[in-house]
Image (cartoon, rainbow, N blue to C red):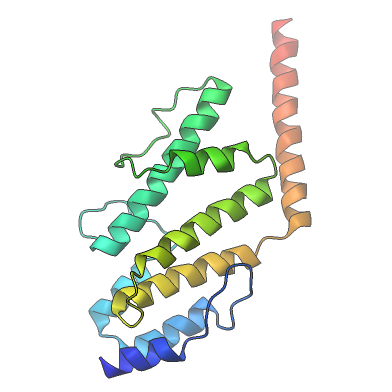
Amino acid sequence: MTSLYYLIASLPALLFDKEPAINYQKFLYYAEAVLTEDYFARLKAFNLQEPPLSMVNLKELEKNYWQWDISLKNDLVELRAEARGIDINKYKRPSPDMGTKNLALTAFRESNPLKVERQLDIMRFNLLEDSKNGDYFSFNSLLIYGMQLQILERRMGFKADVGRKRYDEEYESILKDVKEVLAENI
C-alpha cells in the first residue's frame, strides 16, 4: 500500500486544457511496477479507446463511468436522430438514465465540432474528478488519474486545421449524396 501511496503522490497534477507532464504509457510503466497483476489489468482495462462490451464484471467506479458515458451518448443520439427524423433504436445502447439529458443538450446546441468534443471531454473529466470523493490515495484515485490522463492526451491530439479539413470533406460527401438522390428523384 505504501508504494501505491508513493506512486500517486509522485504523479504530476492534471489540469484540463494543459498538456500533461506525463504520458499514458509512462504512467502505465510506473503503475505496473507497484501494482499486483490483477490491479494492473484492471487499470489497463479502464481504457478510453476500448469501452467494455459488458458491464457484468466491472467494479463500481468503472461501471458508473461507462454507464454515464453511454447514457450521455444515447441522449446525444436521441437529439441528433430527432433533428434528422431518424429511428434511434438501432443506435442506442442499453444503459440506465444517468441524468445526462441537459449535458447532451448543451453539447448538441454547439455547432463547432471541436467545441462539442471539448465540452464532452470537460464533462467526462469533471465526472471523474467528482468521483474521487476526497479520497486521493486509493486505487480508485489511480484509475481516475489514468482515465483523466487519457482524456487529456486525446484533447492534445486535436488539431483545428485537421478537424476542419475532415469536417469539410465529410460535409461535401454528404452534399454529394443528397444531390445524387435529388437528381434521381426529379
